[in-house]
Image (cartoon, rainbow, N blue to C red; front, top):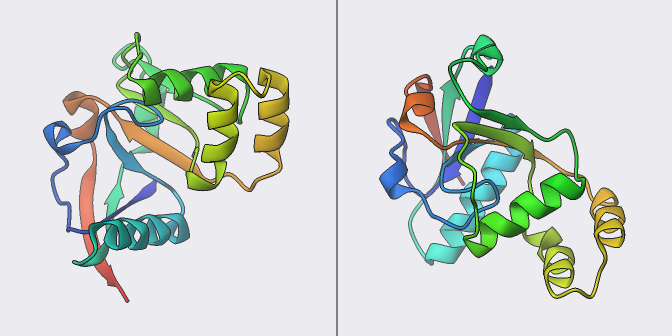
Length: 162
């Protein structure tokens, strides 16, 4: 499987110590199967930094890794549901209580932030929030949250975005 990571720097060897906490799936190295999504992430990070480059690093990983449930703690979400919404909300608040080596599922990007905020504030119910989330095109993200899992990512190349 080919995975992409959007950033302002080339990433050949991801390191958890450089990853941000309080993100959708916890502190981890985030990738996607969508090159377009990775390009958007890279450009967004470049804009937030106010300078620098927009770079997409490409990785490869053996699909069989995701079947090694005896070796890795893996959590997969197939879409925005109550379990996903609560997991993302808790991680963003820094209230994560469960550690996973790998988590994959939909991206709760900035366009969805308003819906998640309304849910967190109790203005939207779980069902109402999920219905709103389903109206958006959701991209995937795969977060590698342990060094053991990161060690399986094989760097391929990088590309500067213009």
